[in-house]
Length: 75
Image (tube, rainbow, N blue to C red; front, side, top):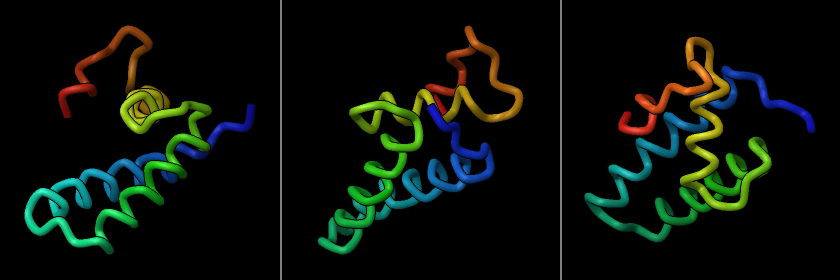
């Protein structure tokens, strides 16, 4: 499986988290669509099928993450 560059994964995580905040604040269709697009890209980039698993997998591929480190899950 191809691995996404950590910088790409970090950017996708940051975008998704920002959009999640925007969705909670205003819930616009544009924000929801962008979240869906980012979620899809995260899933493809990490070889997963749902965004929560994709976020965990992406965070574990970032520099400094330890295989047993789940502290990134509460980020």
